[in-house]
Length: 187
Length: 142
Image 1 (cartoon, rainbow over the protein chains, first blue to last red):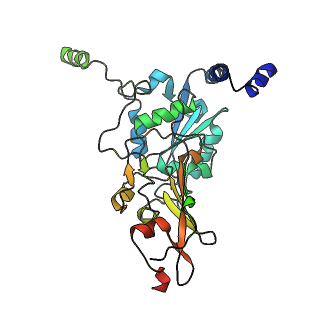
Image 2 (cartoon, helix red, strand yellow):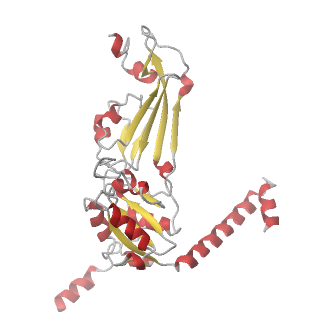
Image 3 (cartoon, each protein chain N blue to C red):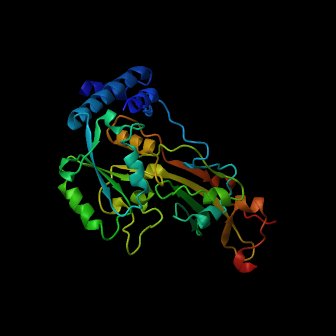
């Protein structure tokens, strides 16, 4: 393993070798993850003050068109059976304790997925008296799925991203307009 | 009963082949807001109309830089920025696969050079915006 690592760092000529090495490593990793979760994922859906739009889209996942169960993903009725908490809503003051208790009842290893703009960052409600402003203020979130509400396909992509079956399609983008100089404009 | 069987058989397979084949959103769908920074002047109208504070800006008056930021995590895809943008720089695309492991990846940031007011010397508006719609002095000096 050490010799392989040294090979990675040295030559820039044989990049194809490096690429195949990386691919092998990636396959190895995905196999490992597949073993941990047994190629199946059990979801507990938690509503923490959502408007129910996200719930409708999540419900649509189990209909014949999107058919979530072909990926081995199931909805379960208790957090004690779950691997993943699918949290919607901005975490209202009343449901804060319920969310915490659900999280504590879920066995390790567990993932938390925030679905919708509210769960990702508070959305329209932001931080106020009745809303805590997003799930990540309360729990560690593994995958964010933005959208108001996200399409069923978007939720599916988020779930498969959490299972490492798909890759992330979005990256941070920066733009800078500082090259124009510091001259003062006088019309 | 035969009618039901006949109907369900004639319907065929309805399951979408989503992750293998891309599933395009309908034409009127409001997805990820795309910003065309060739048209954008940094006039901050979008941040004023945004109902969920997805678009924010902060003026660094010491260095003369406007830090503009769009977070898809806050965005509710209402399209107010698209309607109000005076230069048509923001369009809501049909892209929706925005799941990310990191909140940082959901950001779009931009830096604009500010111009200073000839009378009071304070930075007040971006150079790009003044080129498009000339303003002589800052709001306080008018």
